[in-house]
Length: 251
Image (cartoon, rainbow, N blue to C red; front, side, top):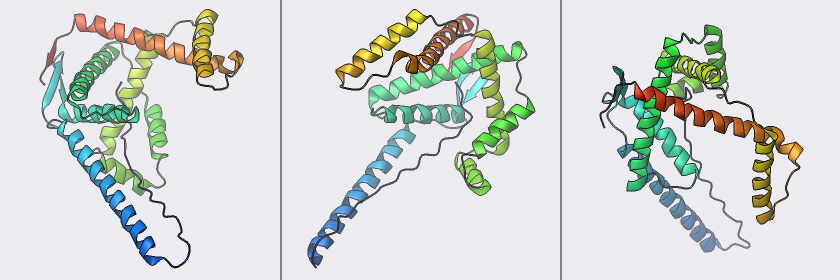
């Protein structure tokens, strides 16, 4: 699913220097040197990783796929790819390995094709985002920043302008409208909730964790199962749309 939010990744390197007793200046200097070296090593590793991640990107103006005569450009691919790379890193996986790079490429293209098909279908059915909804979502995005200046700087850093952000917000809202109306999650039974709770409880007990009561977790479990069902149905819907679509992958 296309996200209108641009992601700003900031890394903080914190080096804690323990206070040394007495007047042992040489020991203090050694600790400071070690800390500086460690910080430099971390910085270099981050820079090297960023170069490897960027190496997976394509030319922004390159057409990466054509879906029913609608082009998907490299700029959109790179944004979706960066998001997937970040998610993989959060899960403790290396997105720069050969296997991971191929997986990310395939996954990114597949996601972009799927979202394009859904948006095309949403247009056919007349779904639209209202100006008030777009403005509300835009205010929510701006609210993540302390000042308007910070927001504008982040927008500039992401390679977007206000108009393109509003366009992405409108598409995201339209996508959500379509999914809610055309791909309903359906009912979740008590049996399904109980089964999920039992699985969680077993895992938690095995890890020596305290298990909350079913009634406490029931709303969360129900929401999770609804999202899971909706995602599964959305995948099925995309596959149906692919059957009658003209799709040309260029990379």
